[in-house]
Image (cartoon, rainbow, N blue to C red; front, side, top):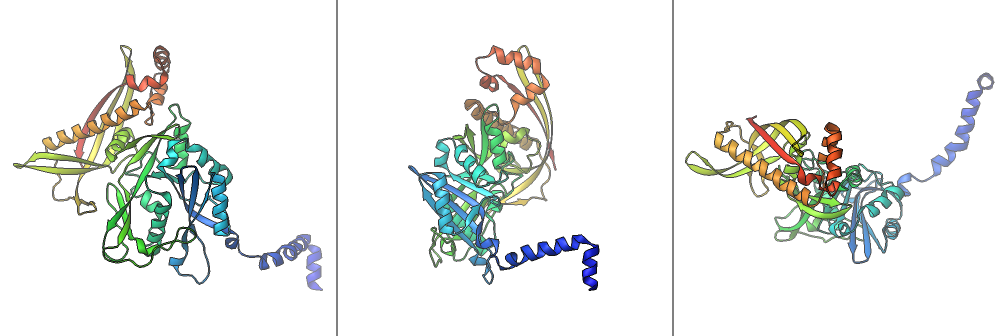
Length: 422
């Protein structure tokens, strides 16, 4: 009776009781959401002639399963991306949402045409996040996911960790899907995305993982694959068995209107990122330097960077001047997998080494600019810098040249480097 009186005094308690009676019983007996929806942590897209294949690296939380059984690679094929996605859902037996996908890997064949139409479909209809890391590979994207599945089972290494290894060092230009779209819809319609390689390697028994300082490589036994669905996997493995190795050499590809126009080396990427304030920890190697009566190779890491830039039009010529103060740390590259080790015993930077480094950095920048000029791809933001600093002069100059896309050809760069031992 006392309880009924309390309910009468406070009508909100009656409302709460009604809600509990209506919604709690169905919630208690309904299946868990993981039985209806699959969690996709990485996507791979391949194209073979007129057929597409979408592969998903999935994580299915199930009670009483060991960690090694939770990862699987599931794929579906079809004449369109939509059909491939539908067939992959059938194989998985669950609805697929891509909002949790940290990585999207596409095969180079998709970059022969405008790749944005495929990615745009996944973004709009499958909730693919713009924060996903967007990279390409010459190998089947499905194999990248399969190898990654083995890595997660054996050493707990995530695919996004391999791709984004030294993310601030290698892919400074941000290879997220959001960055791709920003470049795609920019004045020059140009973007940079990361590049991965998958190679066979003879190795010892057992899975292993290695990472390098300038790039990154990870290898596993092919037999350790635990992928499911259509991907399958070989069993066994041992000395002399073929191994799969995912390699991140710090390379990237240049896209123009969503199509691949140029593959860039780590040195090209270093040159593009020279004027990027956020870009640090890149490795600069100079070879055959005369030192103490012999010739040696030296590798330095850019630990810190300070940049002052200015633009002007002098006698009708656009001038881009920059003064860079670079703090460099000597490192040693050791072993087959090129691990980096800081050299603390040798801290001085003799003049002959400074001269070589100055020449190498400017050479990297010049080569990178030649590639951007050839493809009319201003991924550095030179247009925007002149427009902000010298709007009237810039607009007048653009009107006087044949095409605004040719502006980069006329810019005279003056780079002054101040190198310091850090």
